Length: 361
Ligand SMILES: Cc1ncc(COP(=O)(O)O)c(C=O)c1O
Image (cartoon, rainbow, N blue to C red):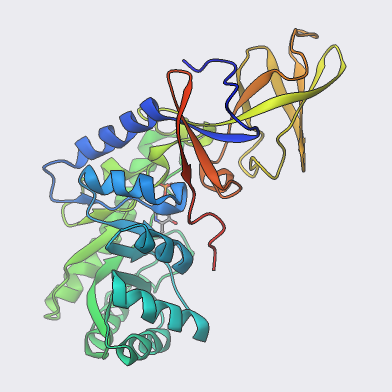
């Protein structure tokens, strides 16, 4: 249980409950232990090399990133096998990608052949290669080529011939399924998406091209997509910390991330103002929840203030007391902080830099 006050925290502080995080990491690693499908955790959640190294130590085959800047930070932190599950475009990015490809094993998602040719040219220029996965739109309607066998086979053929590239397989992220509350509906959507990708894999193999990697999945679908015969890796991210939104979908993982705040004003008996705000906790999935103390509800955020009301009309909090919040979206909340305060049994055990925070370029 979290104590209501840890004096060593300089609030607003992004706090990891280390025991809970370690249980989450172990629980996910145990699910994948002994399976053909492996875990490649998504670093867009934690953005921290220390957490990534722990995931790899527990059996992850590498790390997934959303952005080149995240991948650079992970490589700098000692991660050698990186999937950028996203498109990379633009001349400056090509130069950075080429430099990264010289020091790490990098694989990218692609859905545009001209872009892929440019990538191949850039990495070849420095004597390197990158792996590529054809991203297929399996129902999310974001990036990816149409899930049509002829199109995907043509991509695989073209990519296999492009200098500088190693065609490795296919990727399809079922983002439209991961947060579906109803388990049966989530399963149906994820399985349909997975089968769509696996049909494309079969078509590519039938055309005589080897498919080594079949990648997809998230925290909401890891045990659905990961159980489909043919997937080789799952890109789950949020399971490491969870949040109020994802807990509804995946109660087997614990909330391990909090924002510790301090009461800075008590203007009326029922109103409590905290020293956090939009700059320290995100709200696109709803307002954060108060976890400590009981009897307090967040009713609004401004840039540097959280406004709470006492649900019983009054409360005993004073200026200087700590209040702990549970974010509704861990990934974007983490992006607002430079470091984690790692807490165990009521004491700060370590602080970890969040190296890839803000690295959206
Ligand atoms: C490409 C991709 N893979 C995997 C994930 C899974 O993340 P999570 O486990 O947080 O649902 C995401 C989430 O945004 C994603 O964009």
